[in-house]
Image (tube, helix red, strand yellow):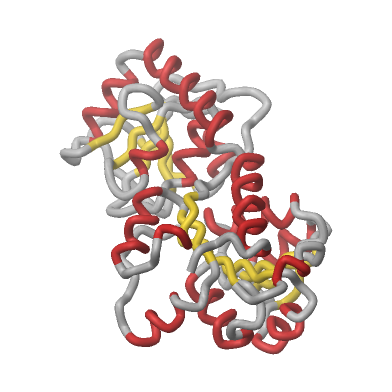
Length: 299
């Protein structure tokens, strides 16, 4: 941390995201900027995030190297929401402005010279799960520079009204279950409102914001026991975790026991309310910002 950085605490935060589609990370950036007073968001000119931010009346601008350098001079800190944003912030601003980096992916951090240089330049890392935090520590990043800040999801006013036998999965993570039709969705919240079961098949996951969305809607989740997903889905408490690849068997357990499935959905909704709400995510992020700006993060 630079000396005197706490004096910048009254200035707005700058948020940088390079994704062009609205996925979990982009929604987290949007939820955060929407709730932080005066926050500025930079996103690609052709991105869904820029369009959605403008629609919501946020301070959002087209991302460029020069816009990033200019905006950083007026802000208290930079929050890079993905790996490319992290790289851009390091190259554009160096150590002049405190840098907070979100790490939402579960794959190992690269160990090359440039990667080591880049990862040495952040004041603090916000890992989406304990699993992701461990991947950061694997490459020598000290735990004192890492905070676990899980994704937050909005909680619908009313839980889902399930249609019997309606199984939903993401179109981007399709799953086939013999004898059971699976509805593949690109409109997650809309289709969760009538789902009986949500299936989340993934080879590796930082946390699983779609699984959290299903829990928020009161829909029991069947998910692979990989990465940070076991930190979101509690086996036989809010859903079922699959360790042997038998997604079909897990889905049938829930469809054959609708009362139990309803109870798992209720518990999942309550768990999200207590631990994975947008408000909790914002609170933990702001706490991390204060540590950085007050010089409390340990190098």
